[in-house]
Amino acid sequence: MVEYNNQMKNRIKRIEGQLRGVLKMMEEGQDCRDVVSQLSASRTAIDRTMGVIVSSNLVECVQKAVEEGEDTTEFVDQAVNLLVKSR
Image 1 (cartoon, rainbow, N blue to C red):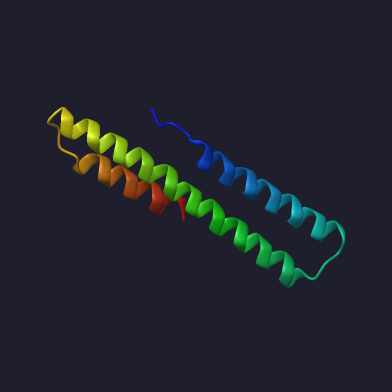
Image 2: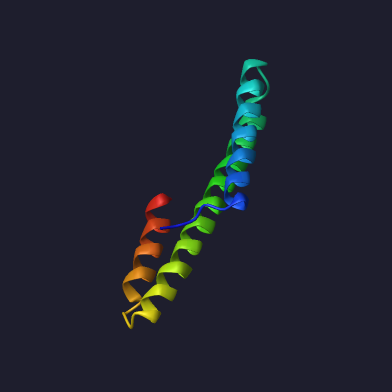
């Protein structure tokens, strides 16, 4: 089981704040280019957070598999598929 550490949780809190900021910008009628720019920044932050979570899980799974003498290829393939499908 993956442990979601404070770094991961803080990333989500920052993204939450970004999205609240986007909503405020929309409510204030700000320029659509600025809104889209902020949405793009939020999406990038989400992508990076997903990468951190997947890579942390991958490290844990690979370490466990190595200890148990299992093939690690499956875990790597699953991690890559998660990241590819998320886009």
